[in-house]
Length: 265
Image 1 (tube, helix red, strand yellow):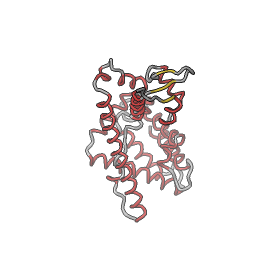
Image 2 (tube, one colour):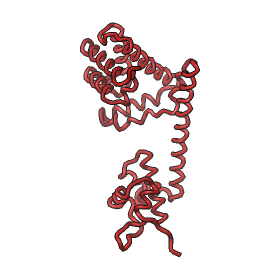
Image 3 (tube, rainbow, N blue to C red):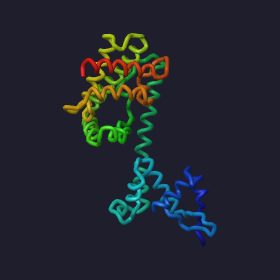
Image 4 (cartoon, helix red, strand yellow):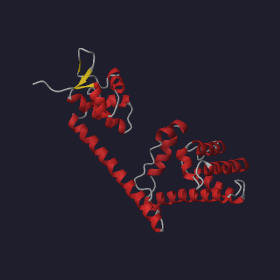
């Protein structure tokens, strides 16, 4: 009895990808088709489908295509480690860990929403459960090098729960005070704004691995660069968003940090 296979268009639709992507996987030897029909179309059987599922799972876990090829290649140490069923069990375990982390994030955000709507006091120790500090790893390594990320990651993992909670509360307080200062209409060069800028720089210099914490590092350039990034990158600017919206809050932070850096760094 012949086994069923699927055309490249069918697989692309089912997997939520594109025929172009599947052809690229074939070109680099990651997912060769099971057969090529007389019309030149690629077809894939159930074994290829399982392999594609593993490829997509590994992509979701952050692996690049070369690394995925090493994992799936049975001639390498990592690829030879397990049969397909065992490998999928490993993937499943990792997915369940991610599911649990997302569930904690959802519960954390729901708790914050309920507290805000009910006028209750926010519990800082509960607000960041499930959030992954490693999500900017590639960006940090690209900007400041792998050692910078490794040092900060080691510092973070070495903290106790109480120390992490205290640090997160400090971040929260800074964000709140920046927004309040920006909305008050004070000058970025005013004493109140410069006091927040001082605290912000002290916070930055306390994070191992950053240029601000490295002896001899160019702290001034780092602080000025971050100020510009707060305005240019909406992911970071959102931390200082005022009720007026836009980049007003981030611009205030940038300007206050610039004044502080020029006078003190």
